[in-house]
Length: 191
Image (cartoon, rainbow, N blue to C red; front, side, top):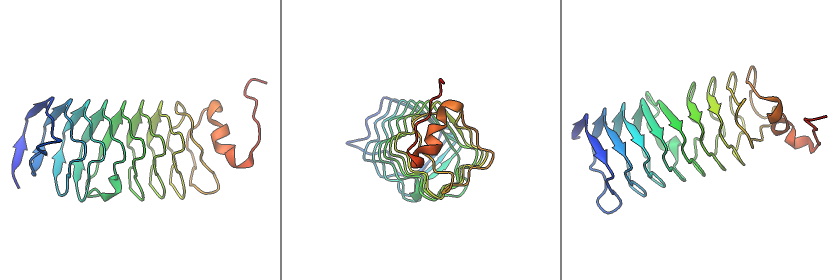
């Protein structure tokens, strides 16, 4: 496996000629298009992806360790196929629509200012995660651990307290309807 260290990739289009198979350490990817690439068995360590398109990238046993995704478009990625060993990621201002994190352990992960429409978080461990100003429209929480997670600034979520572990999770008053959806009741937050 070829090792690439401390390299900056600027505005590269990897849709025709995919990123070379290997291990990438301390690399920065700026405005690169990886859409449809296959990252099978790739290793990324302490890399930053800025403004990249990673939509539909295949992640079979991909290693993401201390990775930051900022301003990235990441539609339909199946993160549950990643190598779970040492997996640490952070998302800031990303579009994660239709991504799947099924059964992943993502304790203390930060999701900031991100759109997460129809994301699958079924059976995830999201303990102590921060969801800062995230749009969780139609995101699936089922048998999910969200203990001590912070949803206070996020919106559009629907979380059934009977089907998820929510002890000590933080919610705002405005988010209360998302916890009571199943009862089909009207809540007046201004009365």
